[in-house]
Image (tube, rainbow, N blue to C red):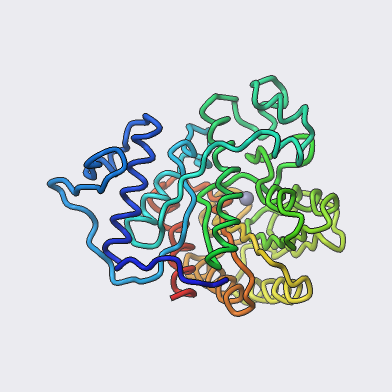
Length: 350
Ligand SMILES: [Zn+2]
């Protein structure tokens, strides 16, 4: 565990990551977005040839996070939830923080082992009301995105166990309950990892500004799953020994109350001694986010992320992080906050 994943020189690693991203679009027959259009694959699986505009400047960084993303993740959702995923992946790669791994669609039987099978089947078929229980009109694009993101969480968990740290640029998990979705969450990919790996002790450290009530429900069902949720907005989950709730009332005047809650999460983790920590790194705690923000500044978000990643590294728990909430309409700002989590991970692991 904790082996650094990339042996490439930094410039080559970024080029390889961009190549994989472009090839994923080509293989899936999805138009390559404008941001990537200046990179042209020389052949189906060959190297990427930077076109006239040139590729990103090779960075000086050495550590690159194995990061799950598929172009299928992106879907037109009423909130920024799934619209932000492509831009975050692209910027994390272009800034030299991420190496892309492309998941397939998940086998629905894995979801039926976790959730009520009739809920899974209704979502897959677009049958109402359950198909929209997370709050969005159902579309095939959202369905496929959800299936890819859940596969990405399982792939990411394996990558984290292998390399010590990995990312999944997915969102929308922690409110999903056994028999339905909720609050932009369809299937509970965080609980899914525990369900598919009963041999692992799995801890979720959830810093999204909303309580992770769905993970809490699954923690009562799966005896290898623990949840520590630090939130500003309570979703009414029943607290129990494997679902610990800490509310930080916003807007905070300083980072101190949040740091105190994080320290409690770390003390809990030291008792659990997990094999894998899934870090649900919501940026809806950001002061300008409109949905129940705790009031953290960008600097506080970075400090929060850095502390979690350093804790994981120091204690030897593998860490898989995912994006979670973040609803700013200013996409550039929103993306920069999520990419800040990648930056913090690299800072802790360099
Ligand atoms: Zn949230």
